[in-house]
Image (cartoon, rainbow, N blue to C red; front, side):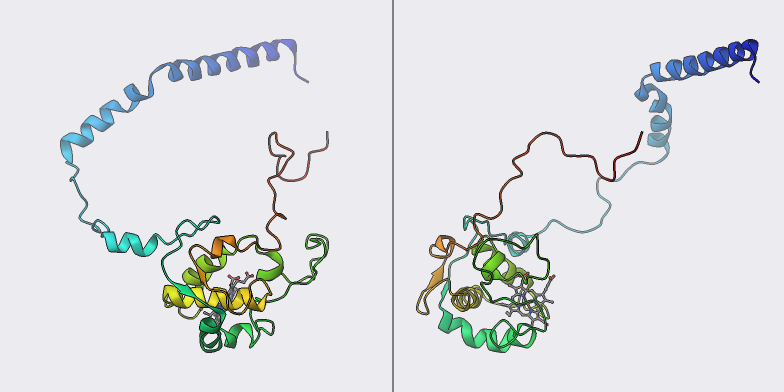
Length: 215
Ligand code: HEC
């Protein structure tokens, strides 16, 4: 059992401990660290450069600076039609995505089903494709240029990417077979899922992560 006297002793100890914290906190951080920093400066002089790496060249920055935005900003010059893309697809893509973009073994690229509604969240067995799920046509260009073919990403010329985008849009029944795709026409292609992704309208702070604690 804890007596009243012992409680008093505990309270005094706690107060002393708190006072110690407050006292230390009152010393500005800079003052606490200043002597150590000064000592360091006297003994070792930091070099202006560590001699590692070099500034990136303009060409290197341009090679990385390839993002294409949903509105088409960043699309390069060039163009392609479905007919241009078809042989490139057969040679560079079909082995992984199937002759018609539906057969795999990797991701299915072609398919519009289900045409009604957007039931993907309710039915995880539905297969997402460019045609039924991607909200922006411009992303197809960005993704293929930076990531595909996955065994040689970055190896396609811009004209080839435009041709592949045109061919995939055609297979998804989104453009006619003679449409030319370029920086002007691509952003105008409206994808079926365009308005399916909306900002969370609930606003306010995000709910806490993890299960709520029981009181
Ligand atoms: C060596 C196999 C391989 C080749 C060749 C290949 N891909 Fe892919 N591709 C993949 C894999 C694997 C993924 C899934 C990548 C992931 O989810 O990170 C993928 C994903 C994609 C996607 C995104 C699918 C989605 O809905 O998420 C597109 C578009 C695509 N590839 C286009 C192409 C095109 C166009 C070519 C030809 C230039 C190509 N791929 C060649 C393996 C390949």
